[in-house]
Length: 226
Length: 226
DNA sequence: TTCACTCATCGATCTGTGTCACTGACTACA
DNA sequence: TGTAGTCAGTGACACAGATCGATGAGTGAA
Image 1 (cartoon, chains in turn brown, purple, cyan, blue):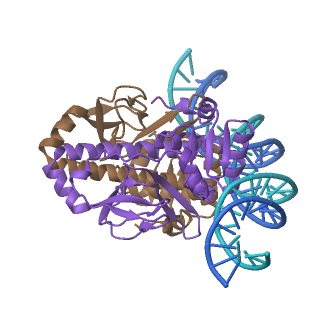
Image 2: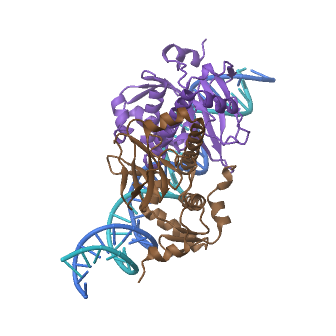
Image 3: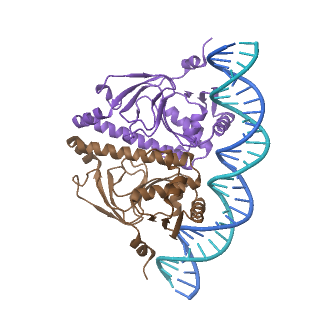
């Protein structure tokens, strides 16, 4: 019998690789990463940044008392390790098997000097990251649990360019640590959306959006103008 | 008789102007801004970004139902309007009278091409912004009200390079909208810190830190390695 | 002076979300 | 098979912080 993951693969889109920053010309090395493998840890010297080529990654940080926050989910085309100074300030793990293109920091600075177009693209990538951090802090600052879950689903849909059937590679616990909630609250609010027939669960990690308009309305998308 | 603000000026440091990104060479125009004046609004075409030369600014966003979030407080040397695309996605107001250096977006892109060192500095500024957004979302994601208030005070102290006597140019309501709390909760937790003799209030907007170590411990600074 | 207004603070009460405990589905492995 | 472990879902209850209401200080205008 086939696994759940194989079944889902039939109906769920695979995030496509793009190269918005144009690193392909900079370095052809590509590194494969297994699911759950760490790309780097908080405190490691930040020798590389990475362009995600395939798969989904998460950046997180853990308090001494065990509280965890997940700061970003990174998709193909995104950069991880970008914001850091001399040392990484976050851990980075692959949620799924994937591929990354490591970009040595020193090579990047050299390349920027000789190729101004690259700088422009990098700045755009940085602006994107700032923008999505703004959205996250908006969620964390003022939204209710139901609004957070709805926002998360909408954003995930938009990011992956998926149709209305989402395969979530992250656990409830990872969603909770991203949205500033507990697993129980995430679970209860997914149930609430299900009961209102806004979404449907094929299995816990496969969600079909039945009513995108209502989902967006709950997510308070009207607050932003984009 | 002198006003409260004048009295505070004797003992409280004025944030110093710095020019980390090196825009002074790009454009010598400086624009003065009155307290409470808006620099730009959400939805305006983002023709300029601004380097703060003097004063303190805030970027905020308002939901249709009236909920507000303040995303950043900007100090001298910081850039505002940087993260935005073609249109500003946030309002920006001066909390105090101040000065800014407007940088036309098109001029910036041209300058980046001819002066790679500028790109490098810009990228560093962007990385800084991402970093401080990470810190904010850490606060909003996992910290208690008391921890948030303590974090805010520590960060304000570090940002302004102040000694242990802070003049807060923002109202309780603005602090609340930054920390994801209500005014009442901010007020109650300031009282709590006062009762524990960790801070002292000269007046509502002038706070003296009596025990920085305990304040930092409450703020959970140990969670980060920087 | 009086009045109107804003801001900070505090008490009483309410409520949304966290905490704790339990159950069932699924997977891996002996 | 059986057993152990992880993950999702759900109910009962607790509690941190929101909400509502009131007070006092400061400020500006008439």
